[in-house]
Image (cartoon, rainbow over all chains, first blue to last red; front, side, top):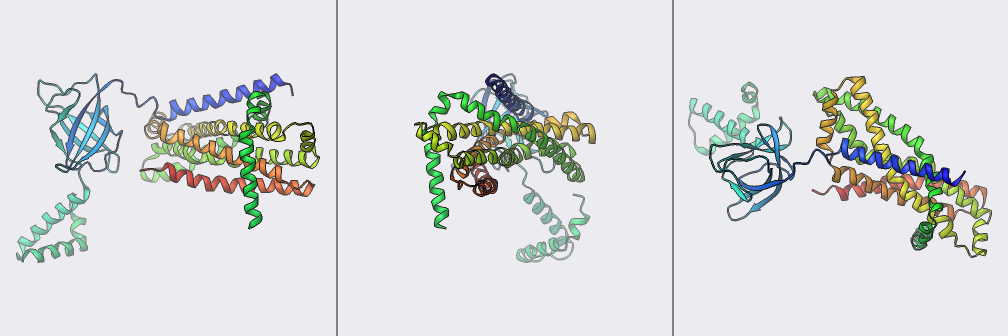
Length: 183
Length: 248
């Protein structure tokens, strides 16, 4: 085969490869979707962040306004310090409330911002004081079980604390309590 | 056992020599271009057709299971991640070993059997620089390109089944995909995999050809070995690479 024909085909082949890669990057990957332009960063301290990941979305009213930039553990008061980058276009009051929510029942966790009423806005390097931890499902279930158990305990007898604890386990094992519960 | 170890040693030496003498294949780049034409461009058809069908069957099977959980929109994510992370690089490498690897082995084996390689040495032409290195670089360059094309065509095949045929929402298909496929962690890692597979497959094919006994039977055995060893190496390397990439 002629050398120039081979060159042409190889050129086409490489171009096709680049087109495929470009398609993967733009249409399939998150190279374009991730852009939030210039940002400012604020920190928030949480007692428990659940399974919040780096780069998780920061949403306000359901709209993505930023990303989680850094998660650190602060050993001074055993808190997680989460640094988030918020889009420069959006200002939030200084008394904004930061929650950790879960998208759907089993979805990923994200930071939800609820604006307060303060006149002063958050600046770069600012700190969100009001936070709410991630909900830990085990804690919720055990709280629910304890409250159920204490209800039944007060109805019958009030044994010692140790017996009550074993009583809870028995109740949980039977599982009828959970089945009827309006959870 | 000692024979096997000896062969690994010879293969490693050939690899080192190929790298050392590969300057020639870039200086006279038309040699490499010619090989890219034979290994890469000629493999396009088999890659595109199989990618299309792999993507379509992934979408069909994925939909079958996902709809039981009421999340058939996630089908785009499933198809894209499966193709970009695993099937793209691995199936491309397996097809490449069958389509191009065997051709390389047979060609070099026959060159050796008909004493073309010795003739080159007589003329003070280094056969590694003239024959082996251009084929090596052609394989290494072709493989990531083929894998990228495989992934993209597979996703288009999956799209064709999921959206017009099954009726999954068009917007959800792409937006869920974009939300869950990471450029660095998924696409670039897939390309790194295919680059490694390209080095492994081409080198195995070259070595088997170079090492083949100069008989008709020897060349046919070497060709078979190329496919078997390449496939096993690709699958084993895939596991190793994936475990390295799965940090955190």
